[in-house]
Length: 378
Image (cartoon, rainbow, N blue to C red; front, side, top):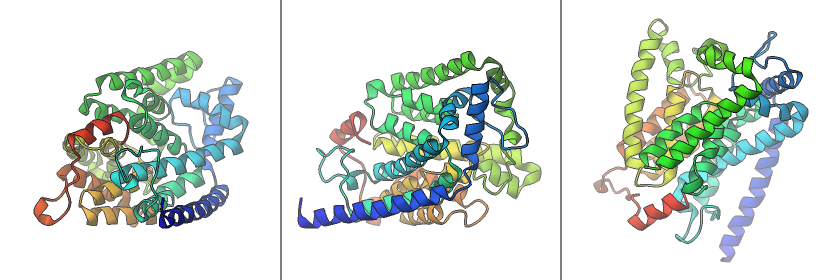
């Protein structure tokens, strides 16, 4: 390692420490509304009461097993807040690092877990951890970092012969990670897809055994009650349904259905293009599709938008990448800015890199690199 490399790494550590300390203070100043939701659900489960009951406060909207896991937060809320905050930062940083791909490694022999400090890595990771979804999630005490972290660890780090279990667990906490089964199917990792489905099914069965009445209520009625989650037209809902409800309230469902069809086609095309490239590209595509088509996608759900912006930039769609990163950092510049940024990144990933005549370098890896990506690194 050269002196310049050592200086860059030490500088990154110092800046990173300052940023993390600042974010810790920011987290402590938040209202922790969502953390209180988890805590109340855990307390109700410990008392043998219905975790989905409400008494004028925000309702608990997650699958039954999540109420059991929330019991730990009910017992030690400050520790739970610290763990949720740390998971959020790690997930945002890991997504950004994975999206940078070859820029985090000087040679193929360097594994993904060894991060080479470069200006690109430092800048993108720094922007990712101070993005609006991350800051908002920290203030609320959100569980999104845990969910995203489980998915990234499972699909980018865990060996293929054990892949799928953690994503299935994440889907048992929040349903949206079920969309990642499509990523595994496209990459022909059929056993991993089966493990994902089995793990999710296991969480549902376990939740039913522990909370039979609450499970019957959740799966039988509450799951489809989007109004219980919140008003789809509320400005913080950055999904296609939120956009449709704000733009065309009298025809929101047909407009949403049309948008879902378009996004699904774009997602299928993008996944097809990503199949022979780094796995992180397919993961990001599925994340974008899931966030766009879900009825409710609050702004703090978009933790991987900086990763999508970095991928778009790397594929030569630099205007899209730069614009999406600005939106991710600044937050909703308009009532549907995150939705628009996510859709633009999905289009960029679907159409692929510009032609060689445009002067942008090709990002297609060699066959040897593809095999290595599928085995060990994103």
